[in-house]
Amino acid sequence: MKKIQILGTGCAKCHKLAENACQAADELGLDYELVKVTDIKDITAFGVMMTPALAVDGQVKLAGKVPDAEELKQYLA
Image 1: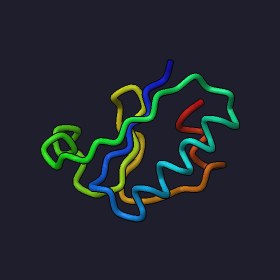
Image 2: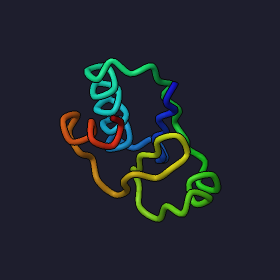
Image 3: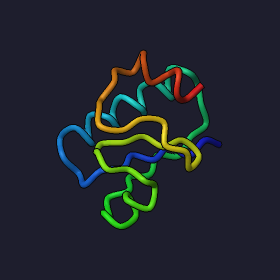
Image 4: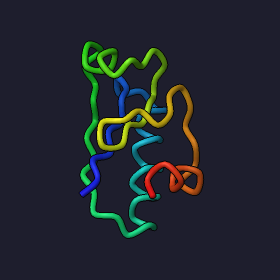
């Protein structure tokens, strides 16, 4: 099971990234758990300075942008 983490304080972009990540994971047929990391201390512990960010299995894949589901598939596959 993949652990998909959305790092952000809950802004509109964070919600959109979560939505797009779920869509991409569903289209890929992945078994996954989506976790929203909203505490700023937890976010900075990842080394992330710009939100929203996406981490997969604890590794940051992107930060500061909201790619569409199609682009996100490359980070999740």
